[in-house]
Length: 626
Ligand code: WTA
Picture (cartoon, rainbow, N blue to C red):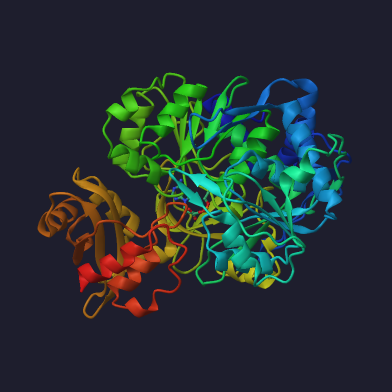
């Protein structure tokens, strides 16, 4: 059996095979597609009621042998990684599989020389430079656990994450280029490290030549140590369930959760999902615009594509520098075939002059993807028409830091795309919708809490240092099921549409309203650039809806009328607030939590807003509403 579906009937057969005998399905896929030092004795050993998850027990492997060595042996000159710098006048760098293996081996040897051992935690606070990719893979090669912290986080957020995992080593850079700005990473790291007693050494990549403070007993230049290393670094042999990395994600409470992923299952699932969803071909250039500081970068810039032997591109800069045509310039320059980005990027690019798109040759593109939030129909249509030129399937991929890889998506060109729907679960993924009595809904057409009822290899294993929180957050609301925290609607054909976080459901006069649905509706107004809809307490209706929008030439009355016409009077927002910008996280997600608080008048309980991309807009919004 070929585990990568090429036709609709392959897809159906695979889905059936995975339901009939999940262990046989994953076992055969794992056996036929990866290099193992030792085979497993047990395929899966999971008890979801306890949040106990284990795959391929007894097996031994090293994920970097699968991502690097085997391709370096078979196709040493194939480009593994293309690095595109912030400034296009600086040359791009291409690393073949052999070259990437050599760089990773040298990095691994450097870390070993510093005293890093298997099981140690290493924090990376780096811009999107090749050294970030080398460091991540070097940790995996020697069995150290990487914890990448997105380079936009504040000193406090960095310190919290370093301390939570007791990282002994930090890898950072003098600075990072992003557009026309330099982020003073070393300075921020120094500030964080004043609070971190666990850190022994700091390895510093020189990127911006910025003036930095130097702590001679602690800081080490990367380039001083790197060049002298040899390229010979045998991979540490790891057990299947050894921890591969920790990655922090925010929860409903303040403290971020250090999600832990392990070696074998994560490798198997990211590779499988990458190939099925994107249908990557041998000579494709694949580009995921995420930052490696997020799960999307871990799974679909590095591990998935490299394990599959693909050519993966990483970009240091931003979509808006030197102008909003940057993404399309890169697509043309590297003849990108598969392009994977976030709806928020698409929406902002769609507001720009089309000349910025049309001056570039995008004919290399074959597959487009989105991730991270629901994509509204207008943005989907723009992406399809102006980027895909009507010729490229768009995959709307739903997944989470916790799931390790894509769980719901159409498969490019194999199963149909439906705008605004993530569509069907991947073969091997068993979904369930739960009703308000916490029982599974059997009807096909339904709406409820999205759960996953069978274990899959890529799932997170625990929250670092707090397994109890892991069980409480994900496995106790619906015993025996993994609860995603998202709501979803299923149509008569079994297609899923994510309706948003469950905490974004607002009950107005006894009716459930999906804020994402109202946003989607408002987004259809051509004058609207972006909208966020939240609920807030209302004396008579229980809750009411507040819509924040960035828009031009639109009145409150028109918006209310439009929603009322489209979705029914019950969905009509109580308040419509015109703002200049919406508060966003560094990864571009709208911070609805803050908007909810403002709507509720709780402006003195906003919490820490320093990690926002644009904290200043919060003040403006409060003023507008006063
Ligand atoms: C949301 C990102 C709708 C969802 C990979 C999920 C989506 C959260 C989609 C996880 C999508 C992600 N359609 N919503 N295609 N993809 N989400 O951990 O609410 O950063 O629970 O992982 O993003 O965000 P995370």
